[in-house]
Image (cartoon, rainbow, N blue to C red; front, top):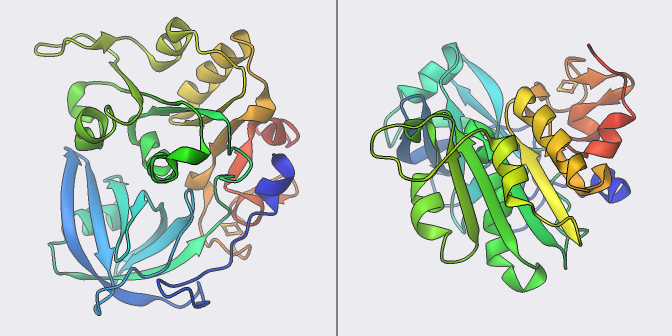
Length: 288
Ligand code: FES
């Protein structure tokens, strides 16, 4: 699996299948804004002539820019025939500018960047998606892909948690769209009024569910501390690091191997990733 993740096809194509230059921004319109949580919004983006800016594979990123403010990489959380979506947490100047946009406003869009989840290698496997907080954003693109190509995969389980009900993203997916099509397991960290679902941390819930490692690939994304404890839980449950996949998308800056801000040892996350198996990450130098 590791080899084909590195070799993933990152050729950029537009909605017509023609090759495009991922360094060339196009001004696109924000056609829908969904407020996911008090600090996360999902932006649906389309070219002025009604197409998607490019055709990303699950796990790839877009460079979004607000004129006069700046630009940054964000994972593409969903796509359709004529739009892409990115879900963005408000954490600084650029993301504040994005959050202040209205439907109809224009932003700059470039991409796609990075490799993608190994959709071919995991064909025929049961898939377990594990996410925490905004970490469900990059994973959502692969969940949607697996649901669209349902016959190619075995059982699908989504285990997702956040601090509170209010912090859960993609509520229409996790509570309405997905439960009839795959197994969805939701947890929040602490009990609260009105919540009658599971309460507890994601790694603990993962162990409680006792998923079998047999023929299963795991896609894991969330805060570093959650990743650390989830990985420990998965190892206890008998999973191998070769079958646990994650994304280091937060390290992507320029996306093209020029700025030197994403490297881990001799590897560049933007050129070799951002999608890696945990066994590949084991081979990289410890940064602590
Ligand atoms: S993101 Fe700039 S070198 Fe990798």
